[in-house]
Length: 258
Image 1 (cartoon, rainbow, N blue to C red):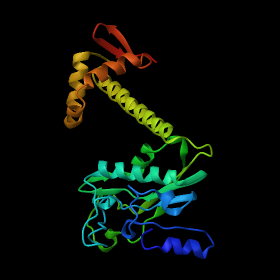
Image 2 (image 1 turned 135 degrees about the vertical axis):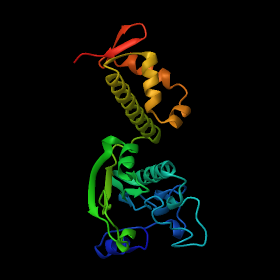
Image 3 (image 1 turned 180 degrees about the vertical axis):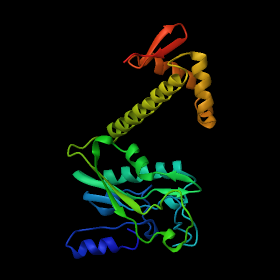
Image 4 (image 1 turned 90 degrees about the horizontal axis):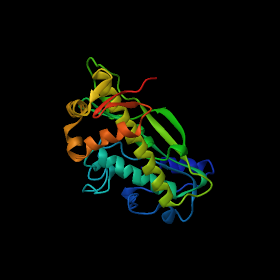
């Protein structure tokens, strides 16, 4: 809830509203929203830190950083995981047919662009996405800085992402299976694109060894180290996607004809 302005405005408009925040003792990563409020809500909206763009605990409030403060995450992966936990908590506190969502921005630092809104959308149920609203971002840290020649413009917008919870309540296990299946399909699609791109560069036909070499040459070495079975994944992609790939002879493949 931050400073609580939104809650005050809602009440002025005659809208029942409850605000929760870490600095008041509510931990969205560990505490149930619906238990804290006492009932389900028609809208459950969060406004988390934008990664480490602004450090809150230990700086804006409190004397020490809080371990579950989203502005003190180890890296973007840690931030995305914790924000997904928060969004699942919000979903659980939303009435069937109601909406849950978050206000988030993207972040560019040291030349690296992090699209937080894109990652939020990718990690939540696709069939529940209801709207992505774009609004001007106010009171930015960059407002007080002067910049020279820039290749790309400043990030001056943020997003309000809304999902609608189905009226027929889905079990948590079923939800997790659905999201896992969605992520698996996304990963499989990425592998198909990678193998097709590599094979195209090799002249639309290549041996498995040439494919392995090309993938290894172009992929992130750290990701390959974490997936020791990536060669088996290449073979699986070839064998299970005959609409894209055709065997020529043993150990040689080509792109399927249109």
